[in-house]
Image 1 (cartoon, one colour):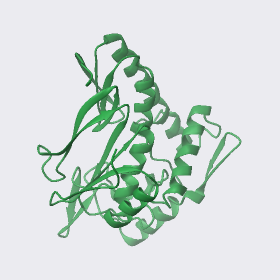
Image 2: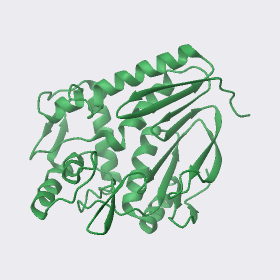
Image 3: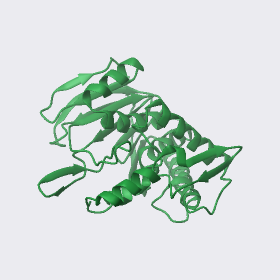
Length: 282
């Protein structure tokens, strides 16, 4: 039976809109409070967050929560062979993907790739040491982690839409849009006690010298990727769904699909022409 939700509230968190649908105003208030707490810990949109201070070298021994979260992120980077990299911030800055986008020159790009190397981060005994100008970027895991924590703070059924990533307590019907026509749903499914994260190269693009680039970057090469459809991942962990939708997009349709199948990940690949391929049934 699909959940009946009566209240919808929205707030601006971590650089995007977060919307909560639930029957309980108190649950919504508690979840938003938890979201603001997570933002204060890990949002790199805020200079005063704990993670921003880690990046600046002002905090070497972060809170146990942030340390554990970054450990998990680094482990997933290894699992995905670097297709996901929590140290991608130098590349985000080089390509200016948080602004209007720009193509960096060769020296700038090479420097950013070197700084984004996971080997530049040492996490041991509760301490984080960053070398060679490395910096964490929470863009591919922060919303997912916040969704997990916010949903855990809610007692009843709920749907949280955090900048396009959805997490559900109970059952709720959700849709995945055509990558080029966001008003056209191509896949409709019932999400049960899980999260749906979609990475799409058409969400934010820029054109330089006739070439179109997306905001998604391959941390292994340093290149901003072209728009090539979308990848959606369904997982009980919103944190993991967030990371894997990015990683599978970076891998590309063929290798990403093979990786998802070999790791028992529920993923939906949609091409720009609207062709749909599932890695496995949910």
